[in-house]
Amino acid sequence: MPLSRLRLIPPSWLLLWFAVAVFAIFQNGPMPLYSTRTLAVAWEMWDQHQFLVPHINGHPYSHKVPLLFWLIHAGWAVFGVNDVWPRLLQVMIGAGWLAAAAALAQRVFPLRPTAARMTPWFLIALAYPFLFGLQIMYEVLLALTVALTLCALCGRPRWGWFAVALGAGLMTKGPVMLLHVIFPFLLGPWWSEHARVDRRGWYLRGALAFAGGIAILLAWALPAGFAGGEAYRNELFFMQTAGRVVDSFDHARPLWWYLPMLAVLLFPWIGWPRLWRAALTFARPLGDSERFLIAWLLPTFGVFCLVSGKQVYYLLPLLPGAAMALACVLARQQARGAGTGRRWSAWPLALAVFAFALMLALLPAWLASGHLHSHWLHDAARLSAWFAVGFAALGLLLLLPGEGEGELHRIAGTSLLGVALAQALFAHALFHNFDLDPAAALLARAQAESRPIANVGQYEGQFHFRARLRGGIDEIRIGQIGEWTQAHPDGVIVRYPSKLDPRALRYALLIQPFRSRWLEVWSAPTLAAVEAGQTPAEPAQRTALYPPDYWRYGKPVERDEDSIPD
Image (tube, rainbow, N blue to C red; front, side, top):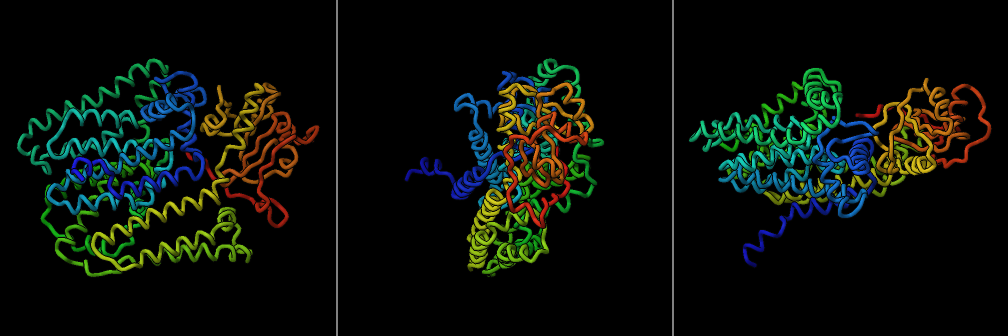
């Protein structure tokens, strides 16, 4: 086969990841509140033909910039409004991120093809980015643009592409994109031969490229700021960046919070002894490749630790660098011929998988003993024994003898399949706690009857796309139910109690589990009467969705308090 045709065939790691990701993302519907909120914003922009300023629940949405929404709109323009295209788009973005990371590794390790070849295998095995990548969210697209920007910076710099990729990142999640790429640029002479040879040209052309990327953002932000109004403009240009950096109004965490999260991000590789041995025996000198990784990862991670607002997925764009670092230490160990003779070095991972399989197999018996009361465990127990067989098989796969890159491939493939299997267990046993389709269908009927809708507590757009709602949902507090009902006597109200009121079983329009709470939809006059201690006129004609196994000991199981994330 000609070489030109060979290059058109995707590598095996990418084909494997893509097939597993497509399988996994269609196991269940969009997840609240992340995916449903993204789809709600895209839907409102589409429905209102307002493509400049994102909107949610009828108000300008300053938290995000619009590139992901525009990509969703592009598919809807061809295929119509649906939730299949956004999910396929998310998988394609993830595949693009992996391909860009592999290309970046080739540019970072031009003289170490083994490290470059290992990098994507380390990356596809990581459990957290795979599972988070099933959310219709912005971070994977941001990670893709970061990898593309650094690809343009490494080797011989291509400043035009650098500016375009930087602008795409800024249009994905705003100025945080600059934080991901600024340190490799500033420290360029330390790791780049091109920067050392032409230091003045490096900084001059780089400054122009940064200006070009920022100009792409401003080309949207300036007209959007004026179109969205003063409040939107102030939040867009100040609050959404400064508010998180200085004194976070969202996700405030202590300085050290990211350190234990590294174990989550680097699972399963933290359990591979061979990798630990390679890291502990890593010897200097440092080449330009290692210096690039240090210049990128350490200062960027340090600044993220200093930033007040923290979430695990904020570090997603750094994971290709972490995968390259792991590949580098393993490749250097392999080049020395050290540690390659151990043919069962994955045994700790196998033991962990066997322990998880045993726990799943024993879960029904533990629940039958009456000592476990979590509704999550009760739900999982319905299918846990079947999934225990699958995890036991994966554990046996990890115990097969092997060495060198073959062992790396086997661990990566097993991890990927294991994560997909865990996600399938969630989808078939637990997702009904997140499935808002029944409530969305009822609210769609209420909208068709021109009945106003209120939500007790903060509304995050979770019904807008699924119900194809037009117009806003009112946000009210418990104490405002009577007042809202007087103004909207034909309205419906959604609320989320931690424990069902027995009267809800008789009078609510709909009851369904939602996360660790319940979701109830009421006719407004009925709920107002119940809250006032009165007896409603007659029971509601309702659809009650409460699985029988939620009732134990003669009463509904109380679900733990659970805050709804932003």
